[in-house]
Structures are given as C-alpha cells and as structure tokens.
Image (tube, rainbow, N blue to C red; front, side):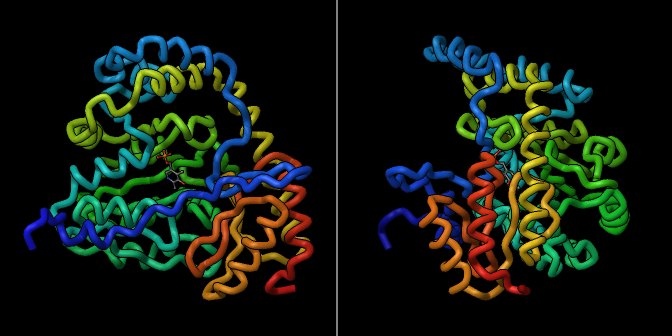
Length: 362
Ligand SMILES: *Cc1c(COP(=O)(O)O)cnc(C)c1O
C-alpha cells in the first residue's frame, strides 16, 4: 500500500443520493418533488440583493457575516453570541460533530431520518447509534433516551422528521431532556419549523432558552426557498455556538448567500403567506390520501411519506408510475417514498396517482 489512504471510516461513508431531476416529456410539465424544495420564485427584493452582492464577487464576504448575524438576532430575538451560521444546516451538522465528538464517540438519532446524518457522523469520525422510528413514523424517544450511554456526545432530534413527517411535542422533548444527562448535546433539527401546525409542538426557541445543552439548527433552504445558496443557522447557548463558530469553514456563507438570506428575513410577511399556501396544499393532499386509504403519517413539513417497509418492489413500482406521470419522487431504501408538496397541479397529479395505485390497507 503505497498510495495515500483516507481514514478507514471514510471508505464506509454512504453516498448522498440527491433527488432526481425532472425528465422532460413533450406536452406534460414535469415536477421535481424529490428534494423538499420550495416551488416559488425568490421572495420580493431577494434576487436584487443577490445580484448586487454578485457584483462584488472579487471580495470576500464581510468578516464574520456580521449583517446576517444581526438580522437573525433581531428577527428571532436572540443574542448574537448564541448564533452560528454555516453552509446550509448540513454544514453546521458537520461542524458540531467536529466540535463535540472524539473518534468513536456516539451520536444518537432516529432512523429513518435525514439522510445527511449518517454521512456527517462518519465523516466526523464519530459512530452512529440509530434508533428505529415507531410504526407511525414518530421518534421513539424512550428508546432514544435508553440508547444514551457514557459514549454519547450528541443526540439529533429531527422535528418534523424527514422523511416521515410527524413533529415532536413540547411534552415529549421536555421528558426526553429530563432523562438525558446535561453533558449530552441535544440538537433539535428544525429545518421545516415554519411549516409546523401541530398543537403542542415543541417550541425550539423556548426550549433552548430553558436548557444549557440544547441547540437548534435551521435553514434557508426549505421555507425561504434558498436551497441553491446554502445558508443555515444554529441557535444555542453561547459556549456551544462559540464552538461551532470556532470550527466553521472561514467565509463558508458567501456574500451572495448572505445578501439573499438577509433580504429574505426582511420579506418575512410574504414568506409566511407562501408557507401558509403550502400548508393548505399539504392539508388537502393528506386528507385526499387518507380518503383513498393511504396510511400517511401526520405531515408537519412540506412533504408526505408513503411507507412500504421491506417492500422494494412496491417502492420501485410507485416511483416508476410517478415518473411516467412526470412526478419525480424520492424512494428511500426499503422503507418507502417521500413526496414534496409542490404546485397545486403537481399535488393533483400525485392524488390521481395514489388513487390509481392500490393503498396497502385498501
Ligand atoms: C433539508 C434539511 C436540512 C437542511 O439542509 P441544508 O443544508 O440547510 O440545505 C436539514 N435537516 C433536515 C432534516 C432537512 O430535511
């Protein structure tokens, strides 16, 4: 062995499977419902702000993304010291593994959950402890608390859970935090927080304010529609946020991304209107699927979940039938498929497809 070798764990990192791009077919509009993206064009003022920033591409972004920190601090009423920003919230996830885990130390999270978790944990040299979801797609928090050992450094809670959809309640999270030692960092991944309408859902900001070991991660990729620009932020106790800033990639949030994020925060009213429209579509799709007999778990993000545990053939058949109708959906292993809530026409087409395919329980 004379060639340079990466750490052995690097060879075990599963590839991140991105959502399929639409396949064009004349006469039929294609819809990409495979990556939980926002179907809307940029919010008012955002494109202009990004264009102005693009004109200064020969310069580095402002030192420390001060404008973005100030805008986040004001919008969410949190001290600047409690914030970190990164190249998408996935960038922050890599940072927190780097900052909190020694090689081989454990990160506990539910599975199936966000595909980036196992990749980030392995990339950081830590070890994943995956706790199976309950049959209804919710976190099994009792089992997750029981999976915490003296090797556990971080727990990731995903609410609402990508890809299954249910959100955590405040009571569930409070009970969980009471059962976990205070030296374990509990990360609440709120990538879809703007879409949550569940009564009694966890209030991430209130929870972080009440605990010294709770960190929130959020993103501009989903509700804000800036997935292509890669901006996320974390909110947590000052020492934890400082650790994240310490390991952050210098200038990881570009000037263009920063300008777009700041302008998006300023357009919050329009943003919330769009989110409301997507939530209404989600409610319509969920009700329609239930009526057809599909046991779709409570969707609190901008996506719905079709569970087919262990049924590879059914998953492949669903994905193929969707593709024939020019709907790109996301099959996930042998567990099921996730479909993003898109334009009303795309959602209508999904309902028609689900009506033509037989529901497992119907
Ligand atoms: C999409 C998503 C993210 C956000 O990723 P970015 O890197 O910010 O684009 C984080 N967590 C979950 C659960 C997601 O689904």
